[in-house]
Amino acid sequence: MEVKKIDHVGIAVKSLDEALPFYVETLGLECLGIEAVESEKVRVAFLKIGEAKIELLEPTAEDSPIAAFIEKRGEGIHHIALGVDDIQARIDELKANGIRMIHDQPKRGAGGANIAFMHPKSAHGVLYELCERGRA
Image (cartoon, rainbow, N blue to C red; front, side, top):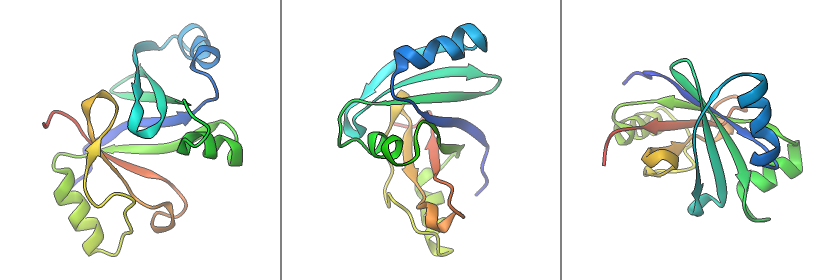
């Protein structure tokens, strides 16, 4: 199994309303849309940057994982999402190679993608997300 590309970089922000003008007006990126992901207690905005995207993540509840991240580390890069074709096969392959997963099964994420996260302790402190688009 190979990684196709970096799908997006997730950035934790306290407020989409405060952060978006920097990305849209200052950097000139196109906002592709904003949506709520209730299961993760976040609102996300996707911004197009070449073939990849930036995903801004705003917590919608105090017990959101993004709220905890911001409280501990402040705003900034949260994760790197790797585009894959067959997410379950990739999860199984990673686990067979000793990689600890946060999700053993894919779940639905923003933009209708199937996602699963690797535990950062298995990835040298980086939170990686597997992201499969275009499959039901």
